Length: 158
Image (spheres, rainbow, N blue to C red):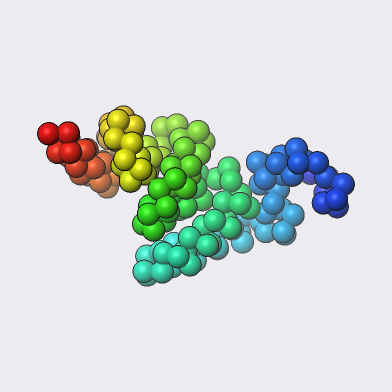
């Protein structure tokens, strides 16, 4: 796919949206896969070292530059959950599910975001899917986290 870059004044909203959807924003900024992977590693380090707000800035930039990458959306969803930005977490999780329908993490992040938004029925559906896909993938970490979330939802319904 060859992207023709026009000055912004000559570009339609459809052109700009197409660039965003195809990862063109990163290309327009001169950021390639290596630069975005480095930024992702820095964001992950920031999040893991207790600086979720700086990590959030980085994940947001990374997703704007390359929205079609599941790992980028996963980082944003996870970080958004940690800073209680549940609507954004749900959006990123939904993108994950659309991009990788069998990736258990998307369903887990969606369930956690729905719980934060008090959308309990949706959270329950997603956590059941997360457990099923995690079991199939052999991902014991997500399975255990989803199981805890499932228990939390079940206790809430009692």
